[in-house]
Image (tube, rainbow, N blue to C red; front, side):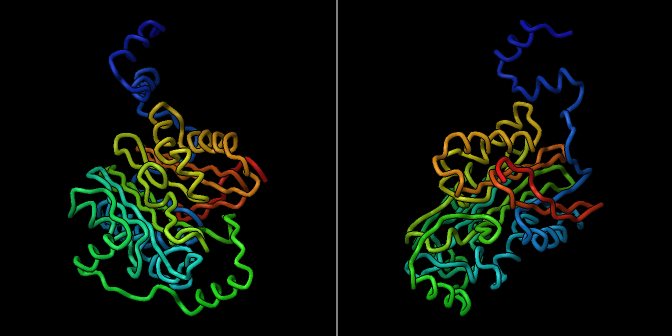
Length: 324
């Protein structure tokens, strides 16, 4: 049996805790929760079902996880009836739709924020990753970059969303409470036949936000984080809260140190509950996928669900939560 002094010696050499679990347990990971054998795609909320179907078209042909992640969320961005992502998204309090997104794979990451008049910010984010030395472009610069790379300018404010905005103007009351009725994001994580991981996160942000506000969705380490050696995580809910917790990066780091996906999500949620002042009106949920195909989720309040698709199943799952 390995003694405590041997563990300390190994740790001093810089071997991560995950390596210790491999040594002690004789296998890559300890698993007692949900697990997929082979490719898998998981995504936040019920609109994740349609995203997963699109992503699976890539994975089922042995395509890569990055393409699957991008294609999966694009179908949601293109749905004008979804008022929290892409075209038709709720505007800010000035009546302007602004979009945020990020994408990440083993090869890098890219993001755009405060992007206007371009309905597929996730595709622009990928271009930022692949065509520039930068990670994030914002505002007018992001739009100029998109137009230069062939994206088309169009009005993102649909008639229905415009009516909702004009109705909101009657009271102009801002309540940043996000749950079932205001999904606010789609985050998607995918693992392909090679075991490579990628993720995407895209949103129109909180309805009626201040002009210029950016949430967690385009911020690497907050709304999304991917470590191809360990796992991936994404977040949904009130972005300011996720940013303060460095949420998705923290979930992945906990998995690095031996936590199972659900346990890692739960621990970060517990930190948020401990540190946030108005937790009664704050919803946050995390979704995690580990390198071995294990996955899980956890949220502050009841109401968060996530979609899972593998070769054997396609299902919408209610996340466990702390507070009812």
